[in-house]
Image (cartoon, rainbow, N blue to C red; front, side, top):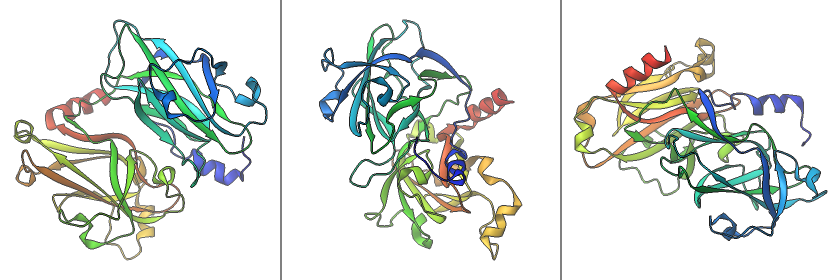
Length: 336
């Protein structure tokens, strides 16, 4: 384990867990295969790993026959999924990985935490929980999970956690899933909500995730997220709600340049004092989209202005997408 000041350890843990009702459906603890080095072919499901070494997961690779090793390694495991299992609303939990990971299931990139060299940044104390694309699991067939790991120094590997694939019981049926890649800009600019803004200098960011875990470890204060989405006319005729999970700390949300809702007060003289008004980071965001703002069968712009008071920031957890009003009400009833 890396040695850090105890206060920093607390901040890393703060809000890192994913608050969902998950039930394990496939146990992935136990014997995996490992190969030292880095080769992107290792992500291919049909790659022959029969000559790789065996390793127990979770464990530190130093305790499994690789003492003192720092650098790249790949883990792989093949498993047969049950014939009768749901293929949507699934999550892969990989516990904690020291330091950086990139995850592939059946050859499809699932996610990763930390930053690989040359701009290395550790994520050793972040719990990995990745949503799986609907239908990526093949029921009744062999599935292949491949994980690239980079360790800079000290212990390394998939070292702690209840590893497996989990189904979510409290899910909401999103009509449009908006999790994944958004664009992001630190700072504040009044035109950031404009659909015609030039965003060439904006960076990609994963949602939901703490922005500290996505390359902005020292960012407090203002930042903006943007995402374009096409809404089919068959859906645009319904009453729609934009769900943005939980946000740390306050937000204002724009749809095609028009404010549709906010949590927290941006108009106070001292924004940092607004933090005393409520624990905004605990509140799930959901905003009704006025039908007159929706451009059916065309791109629509979602822009989110955020102010973070300190510690962690961003759209960090929960359901992110567009849902019908009827499904939103059913979801609220299931939660109660």
